[in-house]
Length: 222
Image 1: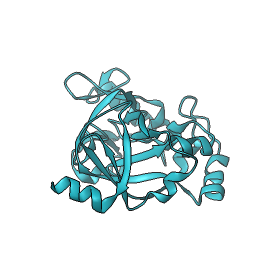
Image 2 (image 1 turned 45 degrees about the vertical axis):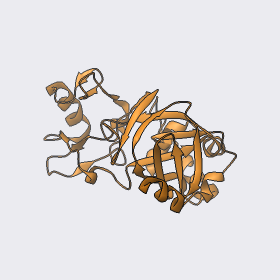
Image 3 (image 1 turned 180 degrees about the horizontal axis):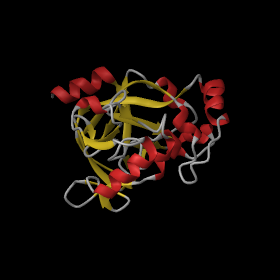
Image 4 (image 1 turned 120 degrees about the vertical axis):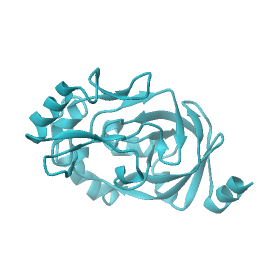
């Protein structure tokens, strides 16, 4: 197995960036989901309720600051775009804490499961896609871990999927049948909720090996 894709989403619920290499720290890929959108009442807003956020693309610039459609995330024009989607008083907020994740800091998908899914894998919004995996093998990986070079990633469980999967990443056209099929064919779950046991650098093409979590934790201690 190898790392086939690496993805980072500097602004939560916006389109992200595909990378050739990334640094993984205790809270996942560095720079991932470090900015989110809040409404005028201070509630965190995602594409689950405001899908048009997916139409804006966030990256990191050379200084490590999130950029939205080529503009610094704090640019007033970016806030105007967000207000147009969410409503007056909406804003972008920086958050580097662990609270910024809905579940766990890393979402790992496999090429076999994406192929079985039968749609653009971007709909699943993974951080890592592991290639060379047969079929739905990922569904038996819970409680194990991945070794990718010096990096050790713990695998907790399968990710429950939501309405965001129904939107085409490019056109934003909605197809509700996508989520219906995920529920019918995969019990509503696809890809894996993961956490970091030991961080480090990952690159596309790196070898990935599956091991029991006990072995991974022992390797981390040593």
